Amino acid sequence: MTARRAHRAAKTGRPPSESQAPTITERHGRVLFGDISAGEIEERPDGVVVFRYLPEYLTRPDAEPISLTLPLSPEVVETIGLHPFFDGLVPEGWLLDIATRNWKLDPRDRVGLLLNLCSECIGAVRVLPW
Image (tube, rainbow, N blue to C red):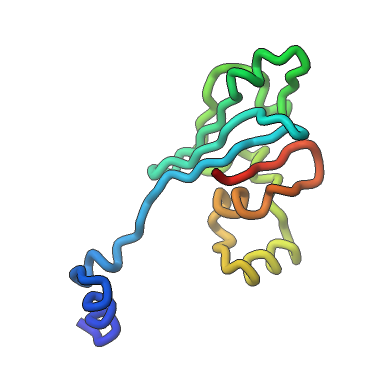
């Protein structure tokens, strides 16, 4: 055991193998279309990302799909990783570089980027973490 691992284990009160274990949690976001709550997005610990329209949104007479690839339906949409529509909301290029550097975000964590960077997007759709 290295000195660093021994120090970490002493600091956390757990054996080194447990102090190294990543915490896997579900992450959730509220999807807004304009200023109206339209749906929810959730990342499960197994990497499956789920999107569903809210029942109250589906019953609105003025309800519109947030994307042509996500038609209005009470059915749940499950994908491995982020659905291409939501992935397209995540910034790219220099803006992504600035965000990941300043907020210490992992550029490979697409769901984390969506939840942290897409509360103010160009267009009608935005995602708020909750």
